[in-house]
Length: 393
Ligand SMILES: [Zn+2]
Image (cartoon, rainbow, N blue to C red; front, side, top):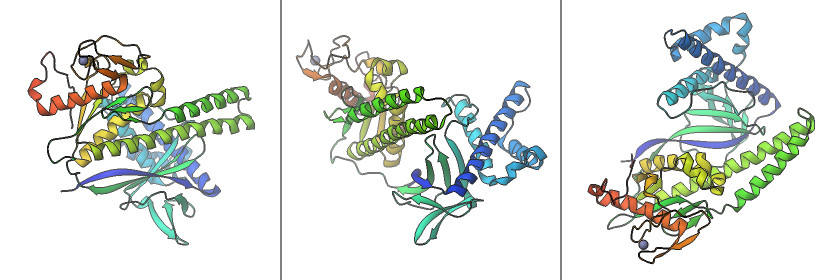
């Protein structure tokens, strides 16, 4: 009883000069179409006209291509342009369903993207090497294949980041089987908390991820940015330095992503029930330095990946509300000992004398939330029980 999932695979690509030129033009046209469609939608909204659908915009785009001033839209593949309209649709849907902010105009400065679907791309062999063919692109594009694709991809998104690096993301369908239970009798639980000395702390007592690397890279980023501010804006030196800054950014982002992927895979493999905290912005700010390492966005990403992977592999994710004060409550007896400043790393419970490491205690409390929820749902809502706001969906 496997289920089909869609997974994204990302690779570095190395377009040649001619291909880079073609891509630049495609990116520009995609951005133009996106912004043009967004403008059209906004105007229609303000005039209280009917909402412009994807189909409306698509036929208007066809007209636009015939107009003399915008004929250059015909110079690039039509697929990525259509996909820009799809992206805008998706952005509005996310906005209406409260998952994202209102769509904004795309800028030349941000990451540039173009998505190819259907017959607009495929993978072909040339001189014993697998390469990427894109519609209207001269020649085949070199890809650094860091892993194998499980199936024929359904879409392919090419991006250029501000460091000038190119990547491609393939979406592939894949069949996965739910994982067997980790124990013969009963269930295994793990609480996952953001640590302060480590990136993440588990209720098993394990601290995962040393923040030192992030600290060093952040320091490097700060130095490079300082260097950039000393250069004359727009000069060759400035441009070179700007790329250097962008590369450090990209490296931090890649490393964080890699950390999150590995962590979430391991948690899903090792435990039946995973309990995380529902962190609000306020809580993240309180936790000072760690917010820099993983950050609000990083934590949201961890939770999102756990949601996906729990669904794929038949695990349960419990999202616990913050109110039960995980850092103040003794995980042994439940006594709430009052607020503890961030520099208090260890403490002893005044009621049961249990000695606690701050982060591990918090993770253990989370694990208990899961045990309460899964074994005795009837206890929920009683004054002494831990509250749970979400559950494995
Ligand atoms: Zn206690």
